[in-house]
Image (cartoon, rainbow, N blue to C red):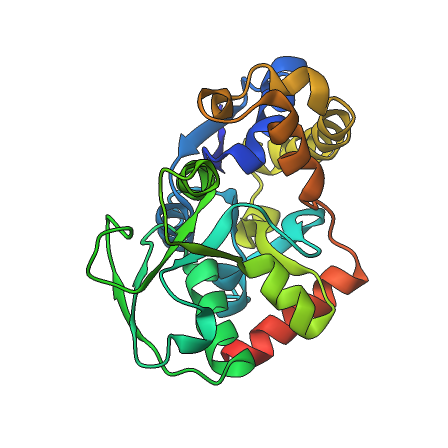
Length: 264
């Protein structure tokens, strides 16, 4: 049997869905392949996996290759809580300054460039760094669990002199629309395939939709199993998940279209 090759981003924002999916559903026909968003983007593009929660910019760049699994995303309507620009000076003063970028996300990098250029009229310099918080730059972009961990350092005072900007919040304040950070996208060829994977894909879509609904109603129970407990309280974890938006409505698609227009 040909298993369905499914990308798995091992970030806290997806933990509730994956936790329920693997706990409550038969996943023996799925092969989960872990990676950061940028790595899974490349694998999906090459056909090394069949589908994945993937950076929205990967879909926008390659609409000819992919279809969207409707009804599910990783989005924000305001604060996203885990995509931050950490800056040593107010954002308005970053003109011509060097900003360190994470190598883990294509969408967040594109969003930051749009925010700085379109909303603040800033022309900044960028470099990709495996250690974005190093001292060579005036500001740095972090995403996912790294961003949550460093933000906890800022809140506790252990990282001082840093102003934190939530990119989801900056987008919403300037557009009034949700921002779609990630979509579940699938290679179009899977729809044309007549092997087992096409049948398994139909099952996966049903399982994913059901797992999302169960997870969103069970955040209090799931929080006790989250790796975030190493540096966040269960209540903070629940608030983080509750603040995220996992839908894909007409408004989300308007936000996605505007992002596509701006980045073009």
